[in-house]
Length: 142
Image 1 (tube, helix red, strand yellow):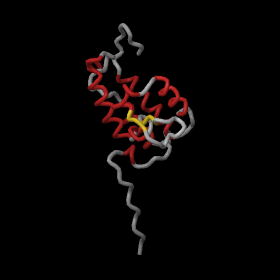
Image 2 (cartoon, rainbow, N blue to C red):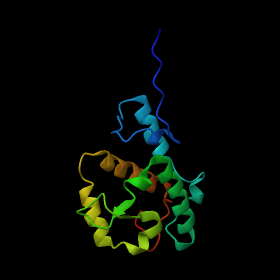
Image 3 (tube, rainbow, N blue to C red):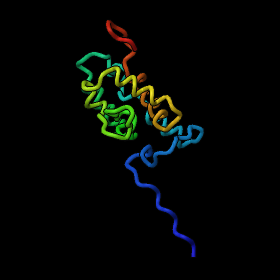
Image 4 (tube, rainbow, N blue to C red):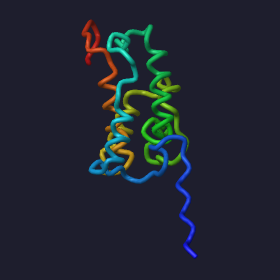
């Protein structure tokens, strides 16, 4: 009698099937990367132009992407105590006004390690750059 096949891991999206390092040399790894980094906006002219009027929509769209890729439990969870990364944390997308730039820099320095969180930080940065409008203006540094 043949052994029963192991059940696949349950996840609501492919990126959430496991917490392992993504192998970008595989077809699956490339698909996860592309799904995580495509623009949040359907049309370039709708893209976030770094003006306050568009911030709510941008953060809402980014939250959906973050939830689908597990970023809300990793790169976007900013620990209250940098020395205790597994302790209490703030969700960057909802608490960005409560987190100082200095604290964010300290946290970012911890992500320079070759870990899955570091890869997640790179994937998070790519869509942030690609979904912002290329239009330039006062105070914009895109």
